[in-house]
Length: 320
Length: 311
Image (cartoon, rainbow over all chains, first blue to last red; front, side, top):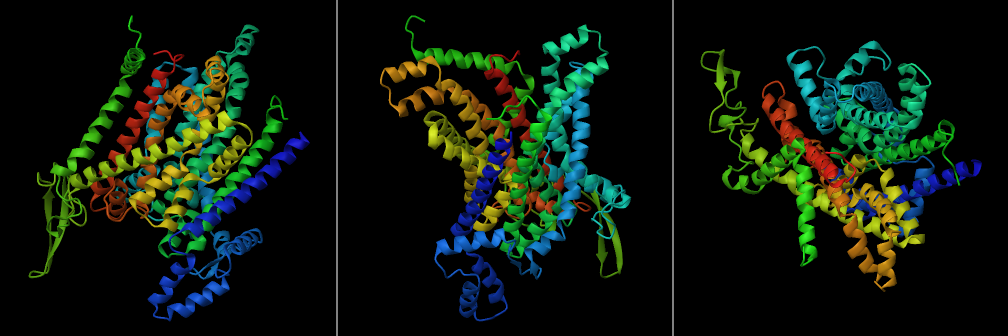
């Protein structure tokens, strides 16, 4: 077990190295170098382009050989020197430090919403298999999986904010993060982001419950006279929900982070998605790259944490 | 049966799958919509007007059967007059804030969505199959390196990676197709690898090896055909994700500026939710129906190919 944890840690370091290397290669392969992007802004202000270019290249070490640049790049990332955001005039780390909380609250609330309702409805659909409730749940999950979250967000704004006037059409940053007003204005964004997740968890929980309901230990539990509540709640649900941990973690990287990025743009929430979005149009490459890298490292960290938590949650897993 | 041609048994297998698929009504509806959309995308632009043509005389025109109230400030009298504007047959689905015809734009969007969806999925599934089969068949260090690389690529959140690469390389249809194709193969590679691993140990593979078949022959004649149903199902079920990714990129302004896709229309539509709701509603409905159809069809295909599924 201990050797497994050590092995897992070393493996994560290798993946982290791979992530940084892939990013470096992509940046080097790009048709315009980061300097060119910066120079576009300089040129727009009518300064001498060539001298500025040389000065910047010297400052960022871009006149050095590629291999040396690679090591500088890795060193900078490891030391937390993630670059300078010239469009907001602060370090990228400071910029991210002041905005991450908005993404975090959105993702946290949407995920809680999706897990609670998804698992609940999935259980209900499985227990009431082939009834109207089950069919309704299945139609709902098909719609939820297929509806583009950012479009759903637009529609929610249009109906509930523009026409009905129940919500503001913009996100108000003057409310404290953990206040009731803030939670209220996050209602629509959470719905837009969470519905796809919810549908996925519903589908998974339903089929996992049905799989487990057919197992022998359920028959045994029923045969020894346990109440149906205990059979479903303890024997079936526990076994069905455990793999859900993996699915939730996988979803974070594949759907949720991207969804949150778009949801923030649609609702004007000043999280990291919005920060990256603004940086794209300001040609602020360090910020765009940093946000993607942060998302990636988060996924890596969460994967590692899940694997380690699993060793406690499921004693059946063997390590070699 | 006496001629024993393999082509015939292949034909009969197809008939068998089709019979199974046909029993799933939702799947056939999905297929029907995909066919309709393809026809629209291929032939529609021939008949439709230019989707980029602006006409400020007829801007913000509602779809046929709908009306909006429009206030016009009259300079001569200094009063604003409210008139009711009805949609008309010239622009059956209305126009946007620059007077572009919504129907023409939606048709153009259908073409782009399908083009990107099919091409990018094609690249991704091709790469995924190649890497998956190669990895499983070779084993050893080849398998190790390929799978570690897959792990690295899988750790990147898909959409964030797309945004970063399209930002670095600049937005164009070719870049978007390539980027989605070159980053979207990881899931397919893993699935096909695990499927191939189980097929590799079957007797017929050992037999053909004993007969002296080359590695390439075993891979292309025995392993890949045996995972082909999995490949088809996976391709169908990844197309909606690709279409949504393209729409999302266009929506945030990282789409091809030269073409009109559903995401681009949504981008204009989000600024006129209060004055011209249809600009944001119509492309979204198309996007939703397309994704839903591919999901229905893909689900049906999976059940049809799965001998254990009861239909």
